Image (cartoon, rainbow over all chains, first blue to last red; front, side, top):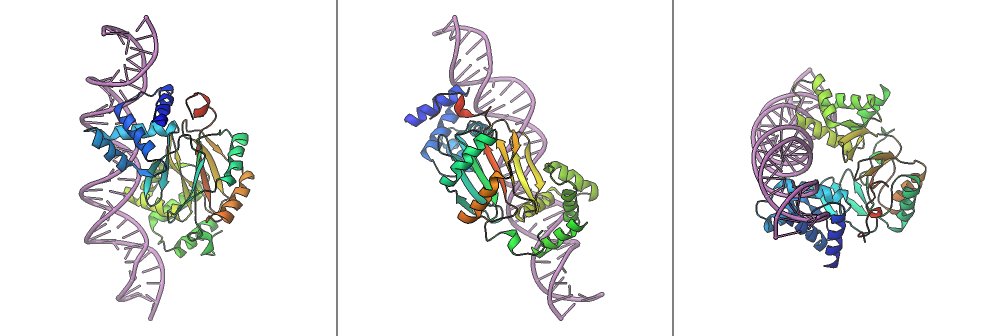
Length: 150
Length: 150
DNA sequence: AATGTTATTGCATCATTAGGCAATAATCAC
DNA sequence: GTGATTATTGCCTAATGATGCAATAACATT
């Protein structure tokens, strides 16, 4: 429960107030690290613990958690939006094919230099940075099947 | 009108059928390259040319255009979803702050090596690849203001 | 423990996006 | 051109997500 306490302290330091719904959601994410959770599952889970939770409560809490770097959102082409615990983890990155939705996890070492460059050249800083690469996998690559492509 | 014809040929080769709504949308994107257009503007524009267009027509066409690499979607935290013509352009990338929504255009040279790495190491191939970096800008960086962060 | 401040929730409402189905129209083959 | 094939559209309906406002509850201060 150490992680949990750390998180609570951090969130409070950012002005959040710990309510039952936030407690439950945070515990859920801690118990489901590295999973990709659709919002429906979050809502169902919360509903089991609090009767008559409003749907807006989920959306607003998710939004706060994202902007504080607790979780990240992945918009998977064929699946929809899913949420994943990322707080304190090393940089994440995924390659998501815009055509077929195929998703690969990134190669970690390669992008440590990218991380550094982001920090040095741009205004983007360390920690809790997540990258989503939306492109085309080789099967779907648009330029390999047609000569009309410029 | 050369670009237009090229595009039509390309899209047809992918199984799309050229309908009035697609023609108009494509011409719009060609006339508004490099702009970030919200879907509302697309709908309003299309409505001016075709009376009683259904909203679904927009959404479905946008979806197709994206998966064929004609346009890309940017989900800007404070703005919403915008669409941008990217067909045939060099790789695009943006840095979008998850907290304040600030957006920077990326440094081109730096990421040519990334592009190569993507191709070599992962299953992601050249051309029409766009990258969206969702992170935190230095002003919003979560780890600089609190000691509770792990 | 009582109080004041303000983040949070619920409620109602609306905007956005998605899916199924039948009718329509764009393309292909002849 | 004529007809067959099938992507596309419109319509309807439903799911998802966002917003304003008043009531509530969490937290800091005393």
